Length: 115
Length: 115
Image (tube, rainbow over all chains, first blue to last red; front, side, top):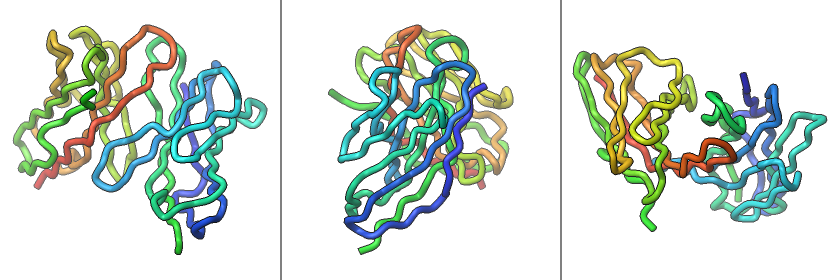
C-alpha cells in the first residue's frame, strides 16, 4: 500500500522568504504524486502533479516540486513567499492503475506567512 | 466550464438521523470520488463511482453509501449519524480513465455537524 508523510504540520516563513514543504512517499511501484492547496472553507486546488515525465515539475502560483526517487521525496518549494500563500498544503500519492488509484493524502502542512 | 458543485454547503443533524449529500461533477467527467476530512483523521477516501458503478471503496462502515446517476451526478448517504461523522465531505470528479494520472478536481465541500 502507498503512504505519504509530510514533515512539519506547521511551517512559518517571512514574506519574501523561501518556502519549503516536505513530502516523503512510500509505494511499491512508481507512483503519481500531487500537491494540493486548501484555503479556509474551500475545497482542494491542484498545485502540480508528477506523472513520470520530467522530475522537476512546475505548478501554479510559482510553486515547483522535484521528484527524487532515491530519497522517495517530492518536496514543494517557492522562491519567495507571498501573504496569499498562507493556506494548508497536502501531498498525495496514487498508483497508475488498479484498486489503489484513489489518492492517499498526507496529514497536511499549515503554512503561515509573516509580514 | 463549471466546476464541481456540492450541496448543501453546510448542514446540522442530530445523532441517529441520516443525511444525503449531492455532487455534480464537471461536464464530461465520468468518475466521482468522495473524501471525508476531519482534524483528527485528515483526508480519507470513501468511495469512487464510475458509470454508475462503485469502482473503489475505502475503509468505512456500511452506514456510508453512495450512488451515481446516469448523468454522472452522485449522492452519498450516511445513516444513523454519530458525533464522529462531523466532517467536511469533499467530492471530486475526474475523466475516469482506467489508467494514467486522473487529476481530481474538488468541490468546495459539504460541512456536516452532528449534534
